[in-house]
Image 1: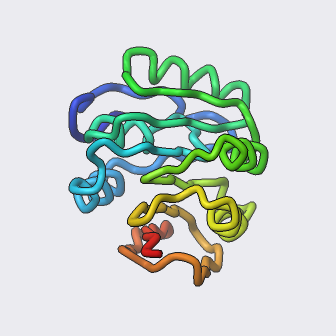
Image 2: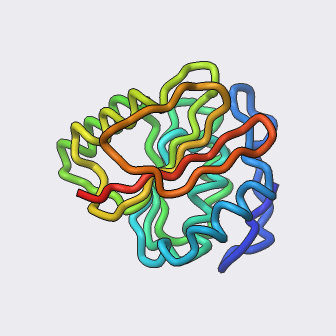
Image 3: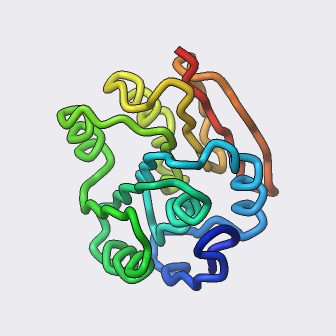
Length: 178
């Protein structure tokens, strides 16, 4: 597993074999970030179910200025610290997603890009989208990347900006327009 493009292109990342995580394949990352290239400059990013940090690191590599990586697994936090050791603009939080989102609400933080790639079997995309909207965590014209497998993802809070299916994975990018 490696960074596909940008400033940190070629950087090898650990964490592809952590129990409970499944890294995003290189061809999916390449397609996704190529299509979002114009939206990444100077972004504040939230990688909510960070795992190895691959997606958040890719955003930083392509011009985002800051990324908060959130995961509750202590093993993942160790890998995140290792993977981001020489990368600027990194903050790592060991919290579950609900606690993290509530903290961001209390701190009045807003993001330009939010990455949701939770464990597939837990169906967490919809609850996250609801909390992101209720807590007003996404800036106007901000994007939410959702990666999932079989979950029935629905929201009337954001508009579909891009959608693509890759074998058994699906990526939907939502945009806040109001």
